[in-house]
Image (cartoon, rainbow, N blue to C red; front, top):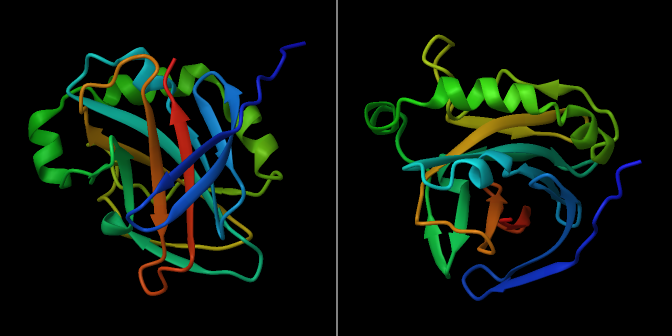
Length: 190
């Protein structure tokens, strides 16, 4: 049976006062269920394609019971070397990056669904929301509402700041209206 490596990673960021306790599930999957927004981040493709101009992280988000959080592109970001990295605008991203279909195919083949679902109590997954849908799919959604009963899944692309093995970064999410409703997950690249 696969041994799950659990590591406690603590990041404190002066801007925003975010602190996160993250569990490393192996295979590039990181989980934090501590905030009001619970996050599972799969950075396996970042590790696989570190030389790429843009990198994809698959996010699974679930609000705590009795909590609702509204998110948009401005309330989801990556902190790397104490610098925030925002998602690119979809039109600019599509002009600059042509490998999103490859990313989607490879991600689907990795088959991490059961590992990720095990951390999120088997709630149904809303795949209708996506900041970066494939070109053949519907328009992107710039806003979503997170609840405590449905997992929201989306791709998060960022311009690669030059990631290399051993790098650490934080993915942070906060509510559009109430900055006290937030969550974060730390990622350590292998």
